[in-house]
Image (tube, rainbow, N blue to C red; front, side, top):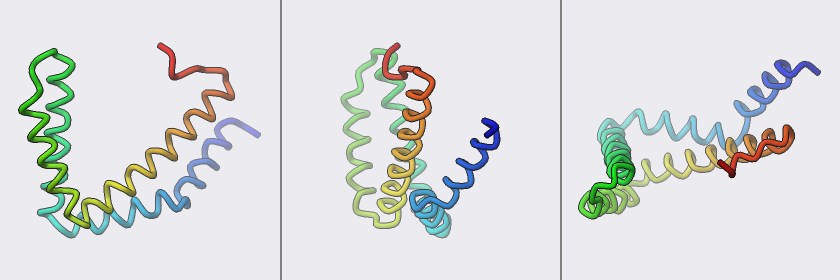
Length: 112
């Protein structure tokens, strides 16, 4: 089998996977609630801000506290919580696939 054909078959299988279908449905539901979308955007922005502060070596205590507060608020919003859980399951699936492929070609992605 041609490698590209196998990649296309994998893509088709992913698009039919339960993880993808749940993420797609959760995304569509989230799009219907502009307030929830904004909350999620704010959470992601704050997360990136905290990561940038960590990488730069600057103090992160206040930013981390703000991020935790946002996570606490979001965790009570069922639509966002459902979306984030579906997103996490899909990312785990993608990570597992990446590890399988890397192992097949003897590439150790866990080492630098």
